[in-house]
Amino acid sequence: MMTEQLKTAGMPPRGSTEYAVKLLAPFLLCLLLCAPALAVVAGIWQPDHVSGALLTGGAIIAAAFMLGWIGEAAELDLAGGLSVGLLAVVTILPEYVVSVYFAFAAGSDPSMVQYASANVTGANRLLLGFGWPLVALIGYLALRANQRRGRAKAGSEKRFGIVVDSDARTDLGFLLLGSAVALVIPFTQQLHLAVGILLILVFFAYLWRQSHADREEPELEGTAALVGALQPWLRRTFIGVVFVLSAAIIFVCAEPFAHDLVAAGADLGLNQYLLVQWLAPIASEAPEFSLALLFAAKGKPGLALAILISSKVNQWTALTGSLPVAYLLGGGGAALPMDARQVEEFTLTIGQTLLGIAFLLGLRLGARAAIGLAVLFAVTFVFPDQGVRLWLAGLYFVLALVGFVAQRKHLPETLKAPFAVPRD
Image 1 (spheres, one colour):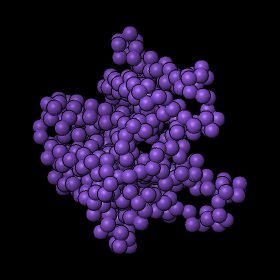
Image 2 (image 1 turned 120 degrees about the horizontal axis):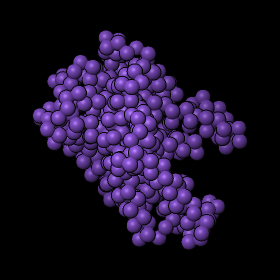
Image 3 (image 1 turned 30 degrees about the horizontal axis):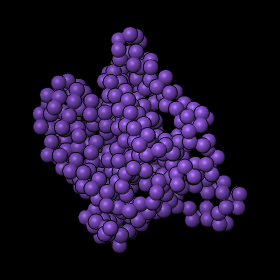
Image 4 (image 1 turned 90 degrees about the horizontal axis):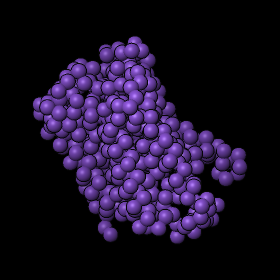
């Protein structure tokens, strides 16, 4: 069935030379982009810190794109809603590797502690404060374009909002559970191993719950569609080989990228904390954003937002929970210590997460909600003062409370969703 869909979409027939070229060219280009970084890792070339960070960061981005393509195609061989959860895991694998490395290194080097939490909080806030509104903007522009072509109802731009599938309520429920656990962090001023294990358990419960959800057949685009059109045995082999290769590139580049990024900040006179907090997540999440924006541009903003919501669940549970585990394995204690700045960052992230959940309790992200998330996210850059940012965190919590009260009729079913397994 997939092959027939590809043919009707104007793609070359499977088995032809043109098909093989279109399939392999993107992967070969990515591997070519990774070559200079691998030369750095092998010690063949020793560039300065800025060049090193650019090369290894570029390799991580290229490998992440390869993971994104095969991750989408792998949905054809995975059952139900589990495919969406695992796709989100695959697409944010680079973020896992970089964050876990910082936490592991902090076990023997206390100066690295701040960077572990910086990367996690930056990735989470970037995904929700920038990714969700950007999907809304692209979706709105796509709607306007369709209206000009006469494909949408007149005046629908006045009622614009992204509507997500009812299964997204499960994601929101798990985000609430993860946020409730994460509230322990700012109060104790540390990320304890027990909290980390609990967050990881929430993540595994999420994957188990998603494996029982019923979802429609995935809609593949571009390179992912070409991978999906392969014969099942060949597709699975191809996916396995590319996954191992991409993951290996990310793993070997993570350490030099982290070190060069911190050193580059010192060389350029830039704030090293902010570089790790924002530049590293932007690099590692580029494929994820690209996939979501592609669906939004094609008039499917609901699917785009669902991908980002699932990724948010993964980052907020598994990624955050893995930090104290990596810290312990790296030679640290049972708790990842945090200073006032890191506590502030986690408080902001928890508040932003709760507000995002409140906005989506009705399974619809309206224009005002998207603008509100974007504005509050931008304000945190304008006012770096700790006192001001704590006030902003308080504002997040207050607005979230108002949102929960306004949408209280949806709260019980959202809280029950993670525990309600649908019947086959």
